[in-house]
Length: 111
Image 1 (cartoon, helix red, strand yellow):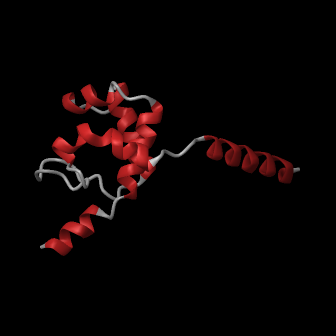
Image 2: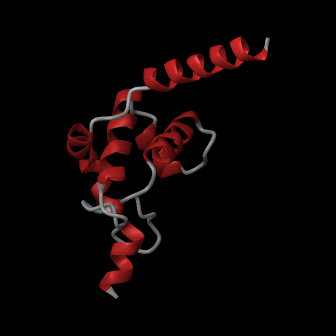
């Protein structure tokens, strides 16, 4: 009796997971021009006060941008930028920064 329920749950999770399209890193690179002022072209940040985006998990970056856009995550500057992003823009930006070499490890090697 539990097996059909388990199979149905796994199937539903599989379908919903594959239905969530991942972003296009190349498109994200083009859309990231505005982000460069604070986060740098490489996602390492232009100053210690700006978060390192390079190498972060794609899902985390997308979640953070959606939270800034909705106002669930508070930051006046990010709210202004994220408020103008579509779901596709968010997915593309997240894919771009996730595809960059791990920023923390990169900075540690540079020291």
